[in-house]
Length: 286
Image (tube, rainbow, N blue to C red; front, side, top):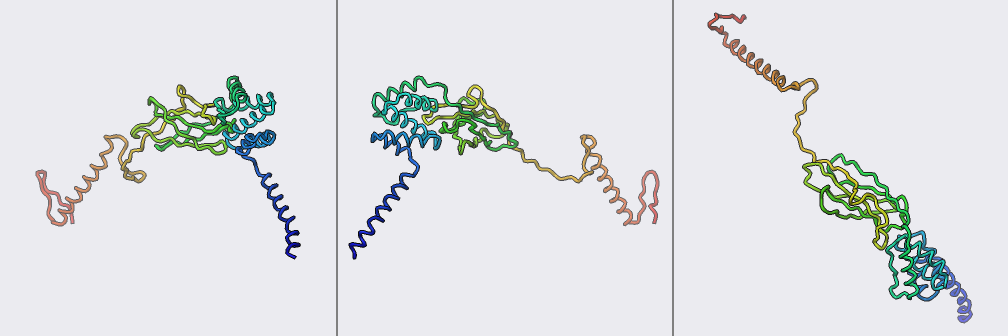
């Protein structure tokens, strides 16, 4: 009975293994998978995996897939397909270096020829609108890769205070071709600060392939000086001194005279005496 049960369960185990293998094969290939297929001379599988990786992922992964694809075409003797792939690779990254330092002389020579004949880089367009700060705060810059974003590995902003001898560098935080970066404040804040900056788009090899602005013609923005703290006494509408300096004191004199007159009159009323002087006496009345 046990043997019969074992025989019936065997096909189920084989079926489970078959399903698992199909699920594994249906998973998205990785660049490491494509390189492993190339290493084991499975050129057809390497080509299929590399082509599946194109158009998705980071720029470095796509360039790595192009390298695998070109190498597999060379191994298959398809020189035309290899050259077309290499031209595409070096237009995306003119400074690309072979990932495999032990590649055959045929492969190394083909990559070197493609690098030397590389045409213009793929078009990459950076869009940016300089901000107009209204208060003294670290300016936030927004940038967009309107074209060629899949060939860009990193965008940098290089900045300085106007007149400074060197530019500092900050990396733009990119996501889906859109990015922001905040520049640190420079100077003491006592006066307005003019800042100069420009953008550089880098390929995975760190080769610049596009830019916006330059060292000789940077983008400029002005950060206002720090606000001064002023003590202000609120004044009701219709009250307060006149605008001119001469007319700003008459109301003070009027108040002083009025207070003094009231004090003198009250004093004599309480005493009941009549004030006298060189001009005679004056009765204030009862």
